[in-house]
Length: 143
Image (cartoon, rainbow, N blue to C red; front, side, top):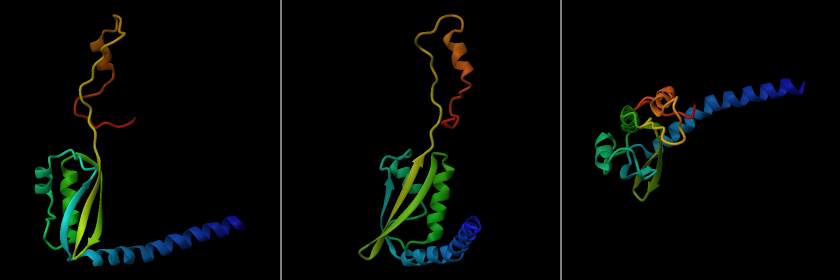
């Protein structure tokens, strides 16, 4: 009987999140929508693109009203560069405006692959490098 009650509890919680969640998110958007963008920050501060290039990509601009459509478009444009694995946006009220922070996680790519020490022929270093099947420019994953 306890297992059945737990199942219903999970369903009830999921239902409440589905019903209340979007309304809560819309309420958050309404708090900042239309407020003047005071500053745009990036976390971490060091990004895979140059600051000028990054600000040119963004639809979101300083001293302009905050529009959620521009935030979404900015995220899409950043993802389109292929340099980001994850992008989240945080907004914080400041005086008469809002500070927007892009929280990013970089994508990593395979660079040069070299076998240099402790190799006896055969196999030679070139054969071992080829055996890794790691190609220059491929996305890097832990696997």
